[in-house]
Image 1: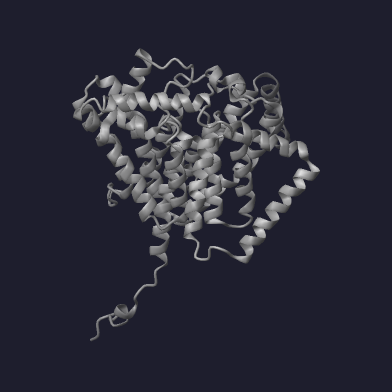
Image 2: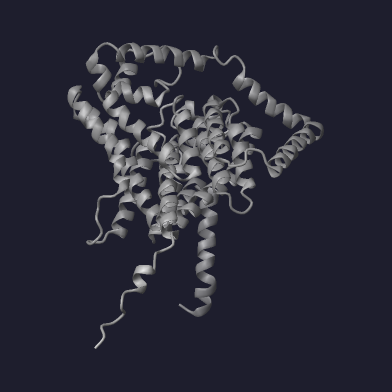
Length: 456
């Protein structure tokens, strides 16, 4: 091949190939680009963690471009494989395998113990515990990477907060057009299309509740870790949070901001008062200059906050909570060990609640208790409380407070994006702790008295 062919021929062939794919199979082109980025990300351990969170936070489990299995399992198993590959990259015979990140395995281990008392077969046990095992492996890897490179992990968290800016632009487009591009065509059911979303935005994750979780995560990271122009990702997260119409994420973000406010040494500052004043002035200007925009904002608030206790989603939760609660308290065994793995799935398959809404209890704590009893619930609560009370990282405490409040209103187990918020919180907790240890001044007084070489 001549030099001119090398210079012009290969780019020309590549350009033609891209053009054909764009006109013929744009989804295939997107898949190839994502695969190339993923392979590039797996090249080094630091980039691998970026690839891991990209899979968890950005790949929708509501869309199926042709996976050989359900999208949620593809995403979970892919993320787990990436985490295991990262552990292999870091493996060294002299390094102890056990670490603080392995505390995450306490939850699936407790599930096995509970399942022995309410045995329903190995299939149910495996299906119910696979998500928890996957999250434990991922958390183990993330915690270790945060310990290895504390500053690098903080940069990662900021990067995904900044990625919320283009996603917010997509959310605005979804709101204006009333469609979810690509996600509508690839949705696994009508429940995950824009027709069921009632105008709510979903970003890239395919569900407004989970997009609300992503926005809450980016806002917490932006305001806690700061950095240059942190106001932009914080504002983008706020816009996305509003357009998602996710009340549970609104409540979670409110709890996170309470944690942030209590952590401030000075509760009222001139800068804070100025910021509030500017925000009020901007809102007032928008009301005058763009009344239609503000009318749309008020419409979102009104539709999501009016008649909270009488809406169908609220009444559905009441009936589900009552049903689960009455079944739990049938005896000592059900309280302590639960009704068995996948018990809530069997209930909705065999009995169900005829309201045509999501067939879940819509409460992560209640579902975990229902399936695995207090033996499964208590380790999970210990993880949340430990991170909330012991972590030195403000971002961690905010994320845990918001996450703990939001999952009271939906089951997060099969939503990797939601679980990634808690995993990122654990990584930030370790990165803050490791960073402080690395910055501690060393005591050189003892070393000063040690001779550098023997005399005589």
